[in-house]
Each structure stands twice: as structure tokens, then as C-alpha cells.
Amino acid sequence: MEKFIRHEGLVAVLDRANVDTDAIIPKQFLKSIKRSGFGPNLFDEWRYLDHGEPGMDPATRVPNPDFVLNQARYRSASILLTRENFGCGSSREHAPWALQDYGFRALIGTSFADIFYNNCFKNGVLPVRLPAAEVDRLFALCQATPGFTLTVDLDGLYVLSPDGKAVPFEVDAFRRYCLLGGYDDIGLTLRHADKIREFEARRRIEQPWLFA
Image (cartoon, rainbow, N blue to C red):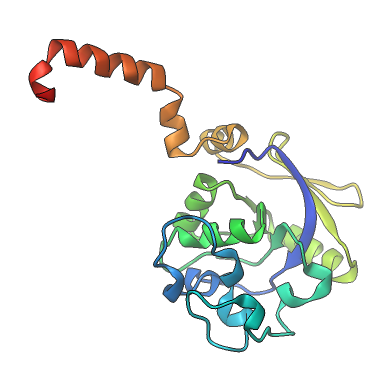
């Protein structure tokens, strides 16, 4: 998993509350478990005017010109600013996969659904919870400023806006440790690979019948 220490990026705004995971990545795209290739179908039903199915070439589809990610000023955005309860609904891990595959490294909002919030950390995406007043301030700044960027610093635990204001945020210490080090669940286990190999070698000697 890619480490997250400090990221500066273009901000896109999704001014909707209670965005569920079926809106983030619709159910027909859940057949694959590769973790990659979901970016073109992120927010599929809002992003395109035609109905999407797996295997369709995005270049042949009809984009919705009113949707934020299709607007020129927000293309190549890597930080998504959203409203409360983002990621509610089903617990599909494909939702953070799609956000990451599109290019988002950080999400900023007032609240996130619990399972989605946990899945983000396990997949290298940082969800940042800020007070509603600060989220409102960032929405206003972003909408008024083409090319608006933010710096999200997980090491220092703050979000820095171009006006120089640093807003602190909180993250569980263990989640922060994993994301700073780039450790998903498998990565955490593999830190002990030498001890695991030693244990297996010793077990082959002490309990050879298990390997017959």
C-alpha cells in the first residue's frame, strides 16, 4: 500500500450529503476483486448520461457536463471535499478502490460512514473529518478559486489552505501509523516474515506428521 505522509493536490467539491457506496461505485461493477480498474466508473450514474456496464469503453460514453468531475477546473483533482455521512450504505470495499484508482488520495468532510472510513485507511486513502464550519469555509474558497489546492499533512495532523490557515484533525494512532508506513493488513503481517518462516521451519521438525 502506498504511504501517505503529506499530500498537496487540486480539490474537487461534491456538495452532497449521505453519498452511499452504490453511488460511489454501482453494484454492476463489483464482479472484480483486483482493486484496480474501477476509476473510470467512479460515480458512474452521476458522471455519465448513459447506463454503464462492465467492459464499456469510457471514451464511447456520454459524459454528464453538469457533474463536477467532468468540469475542466476539477480534472486531475486528488482531494475530494464532501459533506456529512459520505460512504454510507453497503460495506463494499470497492468504494475506496474506485476513489483511489481515479486518483483521490484524501477525502475531507464532516463525517464518514464507519465501515467506509475503516476501508479507506486499509487502502491508502485518508479520510479527514473537520468541523462543519471549516468544511463550509473550504467549500466557499474552492468554489470561488479555480485551481484551488490544499495540503493534507498526516504526519503533522493538519489541513493547510492557501491562505495559510492550518486546521488540525484527529486520527486514531494505529491507523495513522499504518498509513504513514504504507501498511495494509497483509503488510502488517509481512513485517514479521522472518519469524513466521522460523516458526514454520521449527514446526516441520517438531511436528513432521502435519506435512506428510
